[in-house]
Length: 261
Ligand code: MG
Image 1 (cartoon, helix red, strand yellow):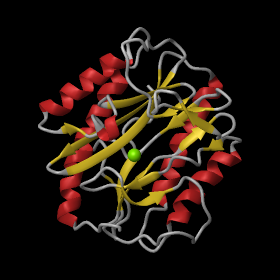
Image 2 (image 1 turned 90 degrees about the horizontal axis):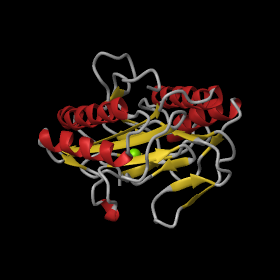
Image 3 (image 1 turned 135 degrees about the vertical axis):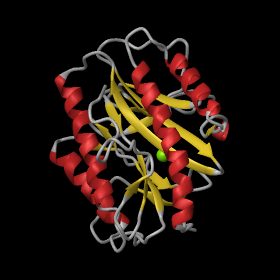
């Protein structure tokens, strides 16, 4: 069942989204060689709690972290650890969620650690463009297939893989609501979008094939071919005035962090 939000509720969700975005920005500022993913996790958890919110991921299905931190060939759901030390040339995809006033904000960004290869930077740039292209399709009267098709077309035109096994989702009082929001699809197909829907659009794009599997820790999803993956996510409200990014910093036009760093 898809929960339609009123404009007042969307305003409330914006508060959760803003906190989630600020937490993500904090994580990005820490993504430097020598830092552990546990240090980033601890800082983000403190930040979220300091602002009267709850880290949405902590304990979700038993997940141990407040962030997901996924390095290089890890696509999503990496577990923060004191044993994972960032190195120059890595990319780290950080996913943060904050629950505030009963509402969830969910977003993710892939950050450069030092200086990744041009090939990896290209993957990240195109994945950011995929997110933007998907958001632009999130308007009343369009279908979810329009969102997914825009993402898939751009990624595949650049020779990248589009992860099939993990998708975006509705967001509200729960982190994962209906509908599922695939990063692939056919124009005009799938759920018809209407004002008041709030969805997390989150392309997961790979440098090689999109096949993936979960590590023995039960969480971390990695590419089968060991090549890098990028992941960018915003929580987006569909309104008659166009898509509103609820996880957006005010000073940026559509995305908070244009660069990878
Ligand atoms: Mg999500």
